[in-house]
Image 1 (cartoon, rainbow, N blue to C red):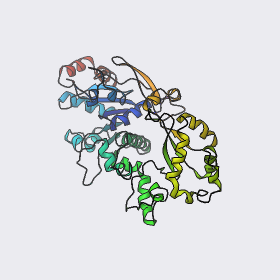
Image 2: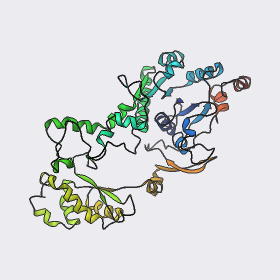
Image 3: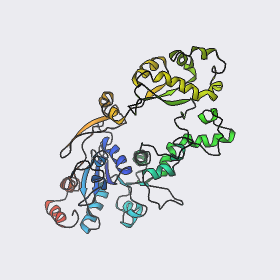
Image 4: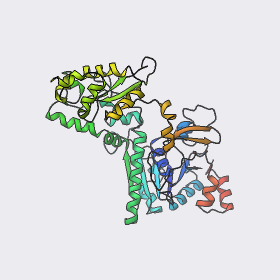
Length: 416
């Protein structure tokens, strides 16, 4: 059984944050109707194209399992179609710039008059405050949400992460808000607004860095490698390189072949309970009896030397060999996997995290499947829609328009 079967969602979103949210809901069976500009559609259909005249991977990988209708809401017929869709929908999702949806005539008060049970879900760059009118993209959200200031090395500039925590991260937050509002509606019978700001989503994902800022009032952050090096802390959370955020010293170490392979590395944690096993594995048994190495506190000022020593051992092994030796001993470490390795990982394919989809024009391509696994609701990934592919189906099957009305709409400017 599809978990969200029977829920209809008007997807008035574009680019990444909104489509991430609505795709997740579509994977779980919601009937997601993507409303697009006639003639062009979602801008990502044409952005970063690798094949001429074909929807980009950017678009296809964010819009699976949806239906597409082209609609010009400035046209009176298009406006009527949209309002009829609002009447039949459970959720209206948008990620336009602040004030846009209101200027179109479909703000919260207006759509609630059309359908009091509908949920209006919105993504914005910022919440109320000095930045709320600013235009926001992924990296801006990372910077304004605290991620960039705490990412990178202490002697270098702030860095953004390759993970799309601003866009896709916010989309995931919005999906949770929508499902929660749907659940509450079962009790209240009323729709409500769901708002998620990209800055807020990033701040939520950076909570451990906010934790560390407050801990500084009690003294230096002893688990940060700069403490062991005697580098003073300032009054805010510093960039910590590859330090572990959980209090156990960790670092990325080179493995065999690192000279030619940029991903021949492992993340290695010197967890206190397995310190003895680490010493035995790397051939440094003498550290076990040395008071300068016997406790986590004693090791703090030697972490750089310790990791350099462990690295001399990891450089004699491939990253997978390191894992095969350390994992059975309970030594926490993990391989640095490239996107090529992830795309071809058989275990990820077996769980549906990586899937292959067949597109009628593009052909087969690899994409990400649903990361959330429900035992009673398998999420099957279906291809993204062609622009306006479901115009007739939506008008006839969802809105129950007769042929005469459909032809009249198609002859107007509503879908052109």
